[in-house]
Length: 411
Image (cartoon, rainbow, N blue to C red):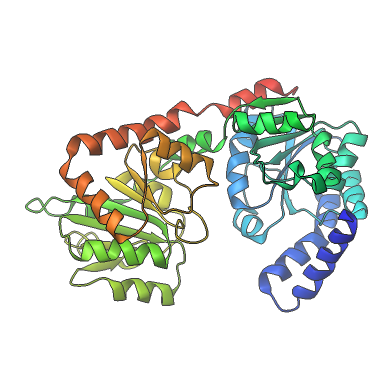
């Protein structure tokens, strides 16, 4: 049944590629993958294969790749993606020797791919459980590791009807899971070679913090004018429901400066943001100068690649997505040691749940709760200070997964 589903998906992607640009890139990338490998794979080299579905999983695997490159230069890194949103952004990543799409998991594709690469080991990041690739790796005696994986009782592996597909988990040499619950769930189905190491994203955000950029325009905006000092609220990866809440609040509170880095950077969405802002000076980052930004009230980050560094300039952060698709990366904000606010769709995000429990994260249900929390953070300096300290301490306390993984892998 699984193989039938894979062939149907492959056919669907092929047909969909006629009408959809994202699917077209995916289909073409998969078709070109083996040819690319045949040209680039060095016959005498030892390749370690990392597979990430998309950009988020890539960021989880990145600390491992970079540490292997640094400490074990005798190996080469092959990085594959399933989604265009990962490949198209990171296809020129310098930490890997070869980067391609991963062909859909049919028996033929898996055999051809692995026959071409012949990796010495493989790392699958978080939710990657490809039945044919993993069974062939196991058959050939090639170690395969699941990194930063997390399991919940409602997943198919733990249902009576998922036992057949669940056998794929026994192909892994070892699981490096995020929490004890995941380890216990795997033990229930007879998988005992597991190690609780946490999430490599904590290591990654600490790397990002160390490499953060200085942004003179943002620094000038934050500094403002000496006679009118204000705290700075940074809203990252915001969507329309988020913006409708926090912009309504700041229209009525002038004791804050506001930086907005929306998730969608398009003219229509930027116009929508502008329409919500009343009686304030707004400047777009791409149009800002040190002169026109100094007395601005709102700075709109209308380009990509700056958010992780922008958080450095905030006093309070808001991470978007919690009123729809699910919250984005709260760790990039928390690492700077400030309170982090986000919406209610966070229950399946372990890092958000941990941040809430630590006291460094605060859940917002609606405008009323947002207004209440902002007033408390403004008026109660002890509460504000404690929230920020707990957010930073939470990230620091869970770092170290990369070191734990590599100490358990034979390289």
